[in-house]
Image (cartoon, rainbow, N blue to C red; front, top):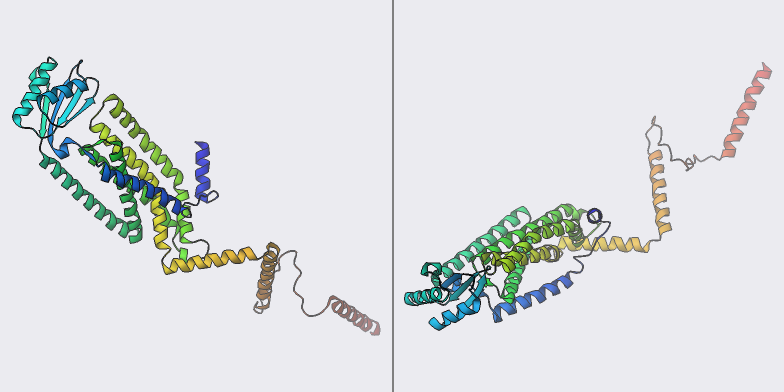
Length: 392
């Protein structure tokens, strides 16, 4: 931890730096590959919608001798329909079917109770119509649109519209990759998954806002000088917040990973697993986009401005002039400039005011008479005074 803290301090001071912005094409290629895989998975494999979205009937049986294969055989023998059977916890099994009639639901319930020697009430059932899932989907999309609109307005007022646009690109990047990987893994999309998707939007935005706030601090009054370009200032901001972003992401991922392990290994299928997987993928992708994607997009948008292009030319000219001037010549030029400034101060000193004392190690400026002439004048004056005393 001490080494990490020392590295963070050196990154903050600019002593150590990695060119994130200069290598943005590499990050764009990585993101393009992830987006291609995600979109292909969404188009070909599609999302596995849970019963809450597609509608249907659900049966839960709990007992020491209950198994997935047995439940599947009982349901398949009772009604010929599509069946999804999953282990839930240690001694419970869940079976989901398409929409059934009330009589078919009752037949399956009685058959399961008879097969495992249970009471009818011990076999829980749930019937969900497709309209409920459609309503949930519409409300989720509406909430997402309002959220994105609010984010754009807030960032445009707090920062500027180009920062808002870069943040939106990162958010959509995170959503598509998260949904694609979710589809690729094959987990069911449940209301818990939707909650997870909406949660990762807030986390990704928070991390991006922290980086952008440092960018704004580093770029204040930037166009008035010629020390660094806008991309250089953005890259410094990313390096200064890098350790903080890594620490925050690790701290957030550790408990989510524990929840995911408990949901998959210990509890089996359920909302806890669906929520944890969406959060885990989203937090990891959000940390990536806040470091590699959002700042790079922002720098690329800002570098197109005429003021930033003029700044880039000044910085380039300054670096080129510094590189072509020899080190010894630069020192001589600086010394000559300093001597000239000191001489100007003495010449321009008003009457009755003593001129500025020259620095040590540098001779006083000449008054126009040589040292030998001043010595002869002093001797002549001395002889004149001596002659006068003898005459009296």
